[in-house]
Length: 479
Ligand SMILES: Nc1ncnc2c1ncn2[C@@H]1O[C@H](COP(=O)(O)OP(=O)(O)OP(=O)(O)O)[C@@H](O)[C@H]1O
Ligand SMILES: [Mg+2]
Image (cartoon, rainbow, N blue to C red):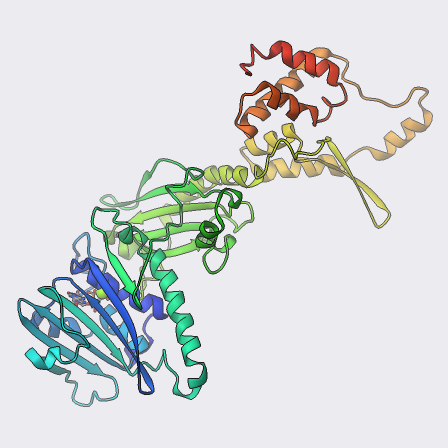
């Protein structure tokens, strides 16, 4: 039992989550979590209004390895190892007491890590059991898990900073639980779960902002893993922060910031297990930081995913890798777009030349302006993002500077590369119009005029361009 204290890698949030799993399985609707100061200690009480346990069931539940991970579980069961109640509790406390009541009968059992000599747990019944509660039970059934001698939460040698450290852990746990159980808290399956922590109700934190109008998503896709079971995959691109309120942004950022939170969000029975990883399928990049892909897996695939005891880690099954990589690559292009498209504010768009000159430490270099409307569109639409970027760099790297300089010196006429064929110019204007439609998402004639006016080479040949656009407005359906 002392060894069980180090099973898994529980922090406070993960330990509470394991108990909440049990309450959900027991059909609970409401959970309260309370941290009460005690002498040189803190007592934690986690109470639910679930089905409760009979005396026999309680004794069974308190047993280490109370069930076999290889047994098939009900589809809605969040458990697996038969350890959670014990290992999660003992990771935080040296004494675990469980009180349960049903139909007027109450019972309680206790493990004390410091008093295990005879391998017996303490048992209590009736009023003895109820006296262990701080407040009388409400409702006909329920369970309260009590942690005492919480040496991992309370360090008596550090009393001065206790409140601060404990409060920090509690507030971290609050955020975590709001995320881990967000689908239950939101009542996704029609049954809403209420969790209150220190008297405050947890609000669901949806990492996909699925209801936000600026969120993009694709249809859910089913990917088989074994002949009888598979995962459901649904990609989202969350809105660029400029479309969010500050509060919404903080919720999305989480503790570690946006970039850390990109990647797969793996749910087992709608309970979040892992997030913020790409399983090394694609690099963790700046540009994919708005991509979040939801994976739903049933508990029948636990073995394939190698779910860990503390339910905070899992491994991607080999036969899913290829399929998921394809989905990610296809989808991250959209996320790149959302990111790059931030602030295509027509009024503030400065003049968009094709080349930008950069002089640094006496060295002059020219770069292709990736914000030029047509270049921007090319990069956005490219099916292979990195190849498109490499091609840009290649052109920049191989500008025939010396030949040009030589030509300037020797040519009689000044060196120019005008578009001599007006049809070619016209088709550039057309391309610019398509870029405008996609980037601005509008079909306004005056809007497009303002857009093109700023971009090279139209700005330089404005008289012609303007007349062309006005003439074509009907055909291009600009209003
Ligand atoms: N709050 C509760 N209400 C009712 N029954 C409970 C509660 N907590 C635990 N139990 C019972 O105790 C059993 C053992 O729980 P425990 O968390 O140790 O293992 P598990 O949930 O079966 O698997 P895992 O180790 O994956 O959590 C549960 O299967 C359940 O029957
Ligand atoms: Mg459990």
